[in-house]
Length: 208
Image (tube, rainbow, N blue to C red; front, side, top):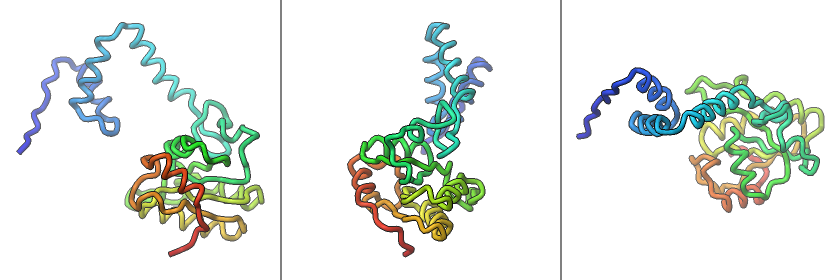
């Protein structure tokens, strides 16, 4: 049986840095220690640049006013692109899904980033997500099709159903990705070919 041995870190500053790095997803204490020790070996100007970039990351990144996507300005590069189809809206969970779909090079519409999915177990309800602006946009007649592109998980299906019920009165065409993506998997991990086909072969959203 594996027994975890507590690391004896000889410096409180080193220990604090390890604690911060290990708070990141998928980073254990040993990996965090390896990363911190690597930083210590770097020249001081590189460390200053590293810290400066992290500071700018938090201070300067914004959320697109229209779609909720991450942006350097008030309007993201997708929403501000006149060559995109602004009447076609793809609903996704977060920025990672936008990047995954953009990577296919087959989608020409815009996005609506919810910032999560409905998950009662985690205390996340509809009011915690960026849903109402999508409903308002559809009610105003500015959208012809909404593509529900959430991961095929229980939480994703619950969120799809909620949005579908809210958008029915607007009369907008509501579609969903074809089930080329395995049930229970996350959209961001789908390969580009599968994701591309799922978008191109999308079907009308139905309640099953």
